[in-house]
Length: 231
Image (cartoon, rainbow, N blue to C red; front, top):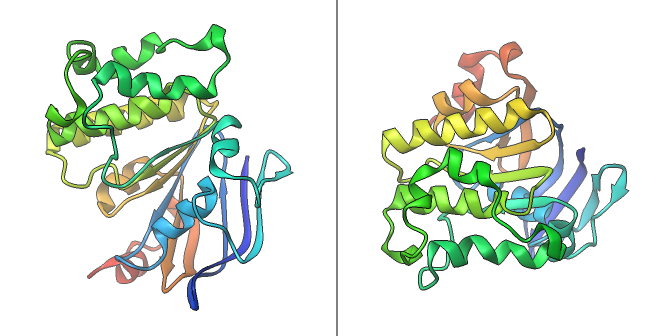
């Protein structure tokens, strides 16, 4: 569904990505690994339309979306869960979830029941302000908010960052469930190697803005992989 074809991305004169290629397909998790500052978040910004690329193409279901703005990509079914969550702290949990309604036709403007099945804690906190939730609860809210638009591509930027182990396990189970449905592609940036390896069918490793290793998870040499991500 998603094909990133030899993209470059610049911040002014500085180049963040160099000829990066990537694929994400339904029913699978594609994981991006790499040390801090190697271009992982820049790649997600390129995919979601937050930052323009200076070379190459981004294809979505055979359509070139390279120049589409972020809101149009979201309307096509590309949903992002940003690093740091970025929920609306002064809005209630219910209002945070409803922010996704603007992308949906009127008949679909409801929160899918499955969201409360996978994140039951949110059902009991609908009237609580987002800023009053714990870090783990905010992360669950951020993922739930993305799922409201019924995405076909879910982009997750370090969902385990600063989260307690019990919530990490919950998030892992949700990703497994979404992957198992077979109708959604998942692009995951992660620092927690064991979490990534357990979920990903494909791993791509970035270093200094370039792809240095890529392939099916089971085919990659773990020692070589660790050498590219160890601090």
